[in-house]
Image 1: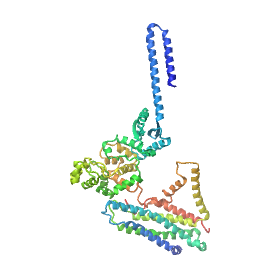
Image 2 (image 1 turned 90 degrees about the vertical axis):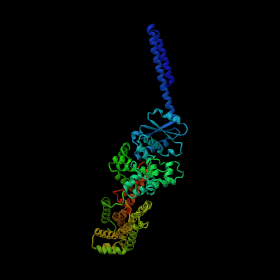
Image 3 (image 1 turned 60 degrees about the vertical axis):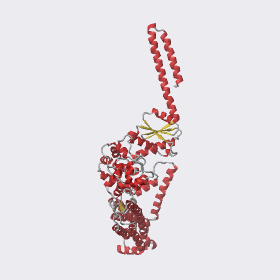
Length: 367
Length: 221
């Protein structure tokens, strides 16, 4: 019903009420009139409110399109086509699902408002009717941003990161393992491990669980770098160190180098732990693959002890076993077993050979 | 009688058998040409060496295929050349003759398998491995033996099959391709194609060709 029609009805109702009021006694007439006026005003206010909501919805429909896939909801400018929008939201859902870091219950409480440089206010206004927490995602940065759902997955991941405790926030890779892929990030993690830049990395590659723990930065307060390694990293940096403690480290003070690590004073590109984002992401992925999504969720919800303690506790194995599993999983390209020749391999092979021999013996040429 | 069949097969196939044995011996040794003293080597050297080992490992199932092809088809070559007259003249049932041929062929297959085992043992003895890296000479040799047996059986059966059996196999392959074409024409997408499914079933456990897949590195974590 249009607002005009509603207004006409409201005015007619008011008129009819006033006509009826004239026939009443003088004492009760004023009270009745006031009641009727109040009713009419209430009716008019309700109509105005409904009109405002309807206008807002029409405005939203004109400006933005909403896409849903699983628990993910994205609002995109209406100028983005349906196919692109669907690909974007489905891609985000797929990436979030494969990472398994963020619970669906958390994702369902957020709504991603993907905006281009212009029309930000309009889009945010368009999303206002949704009660969920709005997260902005700037899609104007690159033309192919909408090609996959990585951006939406990333903003949701960053939002989730904000809910975690400081130990996790410090350790988790900046991308939270979103879009981690064995072929690309897995190869990068192997390259980092094999680069031989740190002593603990070499130890880890050689099979030392303690070396792997240090390399991955799983132990609280541990010293993953040697002083000489930090010095080398600082001198290789393209800009000079401008802080006193850095200068002291470069000048030869081992204590200063250790202070840099202990007090988390190392700044990018020198990572706080030798393992880069792809390598730390590989540990998250390995835990998920080897111990299930629940183990990863439980570990992320845990706030007691070091990151290594939490992951080991959630996986029901010791920390050393966990890093040994991770090392083997990573170096064998996702846990593909090394060369095997057990009964599991032998039985099908022998059966196939026997069947083929039987077939050859039963029928063939010169028969 | 087995000895006579084996002897005749050896005379017909000795050249490929020796050649395959040499290849089998040489393949594992290729890994250690990258260096042997790895105990205290920088991790990057160990990494490159491991990658090389894995790349060379990929060649081993290829060798198993070659063994199966040359020896499986070669086993029947003298019979095909003599129009099977020799087989028909023997006082043994056909099934027994096929069994004897298979057994003799499988015995010849053992030569490259043994050579690969010896080559692997020599390669393992010539390196000092760093901690965390292991050698798998026995597993590699056994897996190679199983792969050779499967490939040999396949080509052995193909070589002696009737035209009707060959046509049936070709018809099956054609049917798979046709099914893919029909599905494509009907625009049924989203699911794996028939050929993909067939290939998946063949190369994944317990498929007949699963033994050729997986990892084949002599040195691994």
